[in-house]
Image (cartoon, rainbow, N blue to C red; front, side, top):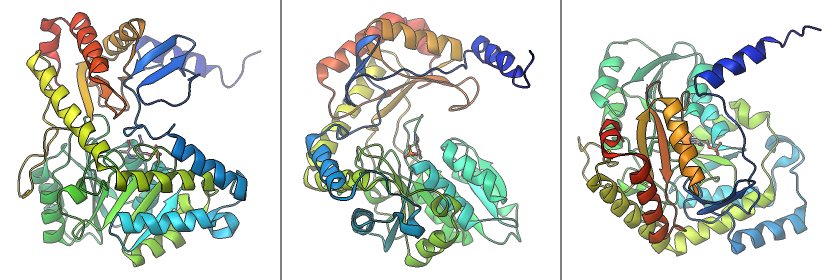
Length: 410
Ligand code: PMP
């Protein structure tokens, strides 16, 4: 009998043909930052955002176990009803301290945090300036907000300025960007964006999802590393990458956080995250603060590996922001290293070949990246060893002969 869902078969066939069909691989091992076990065996893992290898750390497990023993598992309700517990309260306070911010708001994910911040700050009659490579959660927040969206070329502050000045008379203006871009692994020109925002009375919001725990003397992110905390007061983060847990957060002035608490629908209408996740994140924050060597060695390893790839003919784009008005230089050391192959089918084929050789590097296709920019996304973590990197390099060299490396723009 025909079903009104029959069209989904055709749609899946189209995705398959275009190399865009996704499938799930079930991990059968603990979440280890540098190894992954599945039905296909144990592979070297270059696909985790667990940059400091804390997700399976015994100290985080113990903290989560204790919280579960104390308060149970689920939080039972949205935060404004009865879902907000003591671990949540302590974590929100600690995050505000860690980020040198007045207040912090916890959400169930970084995705929900981005949607919350954009939809709460702008609406009809307002203007959003959004970097062309911003994360999908920012894009979705922009679409939901109802404001005009002007997309500026990736990292191009002059383009953002042109778009801004060509729209006089808008009510509120919001500039929003990732700090460390999730797929390109490069850093936004935050100081120049802060200048632009100040010149035009625009709000500036920065998503530090991939930079928390990795950049900055305290480990709070790129904004801290560039000395911009007072100029970029509203920031989004996640507990689910370097902090090894799950959940999202927003920090900022008390008035902004209070407004979000009363108006952001992804905060109001979703059950609070678990207190076990909050307890684990609290422990991770302590480790980030007490063990700066973790991030220092990850950045040093990433810098060396970027240089090594480049010396072997891979065109690895510098991850540091274009200087502009920036006073503090950053090293070319981001832990996210893309190798752009362009075509999604070819990208997935190389990812598959790597898998057959014991290495997991995710292939990233549209809509995660623009058409023609499919890439292998290598993410390094503090659990990787130099022999892991040697193995990855030798397989990449074997699979991507010199001629095809030259075509890659990574
Ligand atoms: N922002 C960026 C830049 C991200 O890459 C991600 C996750 N990939 C998120 C936000 C969402 O965070 P979460 O996974 O906690 O929802």
